[in-house]
Image (cartoon, rainbow, N blue to C red; front, side, top):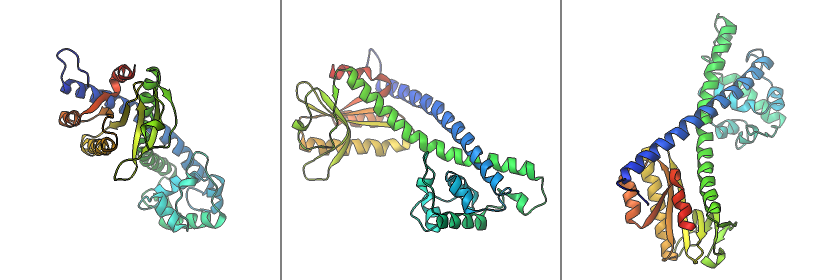
Length: 299
């Protein structure tokens, strides 16, 4: 890990935390707003086609399978895709909730509609049993239900997006350094990867153990292997587990390839003590907000 002047590890750790928080807040807000608006549309669709949740039918689900997600959150309590699917005689409702959903069979949709009708959360649809201002309560229900869904979906989307973004940045940096991208599903020896190239996400055969996945494996122009793990850590307590994963992989890789370089491309909430642990294990640390050092390594 390169430091400049009087800079300390603590300084770089703080920079990384600030960098990660800025990414998180910008992205999670966008994801939340997108999911909130999308699910308001689904809520309105169901309300319009069921007389404000009074008359469910299988056709409502079959015509717009994405409403399955909304229905999962209308029951008491909200249930998972697998649990809802189980009640409808299938493994999961996942395929109905995708951007390009499949259409459930008529009997499956019928079972889902019946289940929701029997298990509606009365607090989310108070107008069905109470003398209240229905128009007002429907609007309040929509805000409440869509907020719950948007919170959950935004977190899931962020986790997946954040990992992809970090790995894309690492790959772009190695391309910028002049390495060629290749695709290798299993690395059994250094000869499986050409010099001056790298492969994203591949399994590595290790001595005396199962294959160990690497986010990246590169082969330098002098022939040396470099294993790189990319970790973006948003919660400090998670860092201990993630750093341990890197160290365990380092042990496996170096047992099989003792002369290799093992590196971590990091971002986020990682205590200084955990960085020192990596450095003591001779694991090279690159920071996502300073990937010029990764480029320099391969240039």
